[in-house]
Image 1: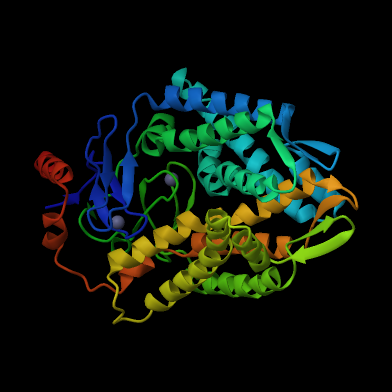
Image 2: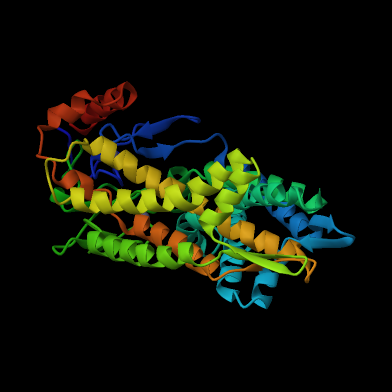
Amino acid sequence: MATTRHSRRRLRACHECDLLVALPPLRPREKADCPRCEHTLATRHDKPAERSLALAVAALIMLTLSVAFPFISFEARGVTNRIELTETASTLVGFHEPLVAICVLLTVIILPTVYLCGVIWLSLGLLGRHVLPYSRGIARTLKHLTPWMMADVFVIAALVSLIKIAGMADVSLGLSFWTFCAYALLLLLTTQSIDTDWMWFALASEPLAPEGARSGELAAPQGLSGCTTCGLVNRLDAQGRGRCRRCGETLHARTPVSRQRTLALLLAAVVMYIPANLYPIMSTTSLGNTSPSTIIGGVMLFLQHGDIPIAVIIFTASVVVPIGKILALGWLCYAVRHRGEPLSNVTRVRLYRITEFIGRWSMVDVFVVAILVALIRAGELISVEPGPAALSFASVVIITMLAAHSFDPRMIWDDLPQRPRRAWRDRLPRRIATVSSRKESDDA
Ligand SMILES: [Zn+2]
Ligand SMILES: [Zn+2]
């Protein structure tokens, strides 16, 4: 009944459980969720191109102002120092930490700039009803850039740094600190304003769904796969591979060697987590005395000073999140191959979503080091130097993020015995259900 010959229905294969569903027509501010795993399939915004363009232009202006004016200044024992935003990266190069510097520069300034310019380019084309050159490539790139932009994490790191040095120096915030906060917020709103489903429809319309596709069933057994970038459902070849007809993204029934790659990356993260904790993340020199501090040492220092909320933030970001993420992903890799686990598949996929969402927040401690190293530079009197753990810890964050990306959540559902289609149909949200049944009569 739900079979389509080349029907006009817009099919989507859920990225997280592989269920094939028919998208209902969405009005602005409505979204369609997967009836099985609650993953959001599509969200519709009001005037998406105008909104994205306005936000991206505003964010880019705020970023330009953030780079142009002083960020933070401090005064201690008669010595003053004022830094600009880019100095948080350039000072690290002077301390022979070019990789950490690149990491800061990329995640806070360069990738967001590329992203915002891409959004502006696409929006201008869509508003002018004339798609500009390279738009498809840019739209594909935006999707891959999103998780690596960390301006919001940098704001938290700046606040932690301020509290950390408040006791030993007079700190004042420059104009660029406030514009940077505005930039971080606008960047976040820009990423949320992107209506991927509408954008791809406007860029390249919607090719017809593959012949014989049956909604309410898994896509892979039907030889189909949903594009992770534009959402279009495509037919795969006999080896379970293919290329999206609309955006050109490479497709697989299941990401090849996903479990093995995730486990290998987790192992690498565990190995890097050892030096990240054993070596000092930074050394503070005060009146000629140098005292190195590890991640845990830094947390204990905050506790001794009574800054319990900051201690909790650093402990959560640097210890709980990385270890929790490694354990959760490791367990998911085990659970997709072994039945009889106590948690339901919905709980497992929620666990996966949490690990994917929280990973980037671990970068707080690395950014704190970058800010303090740039700001506190008064030689023997008072200064901060980066320690070897900064690079190890930054690599733990990046490797665990890559591990979460390489895990294919559709594997979670593969163990599930095939239930009759009616079971999913009964659980469809009302809006989707009514539209599906109306569409089916259209197909007949
Ligand atoms: Zn789903
Ligand atoms: Zn695609």
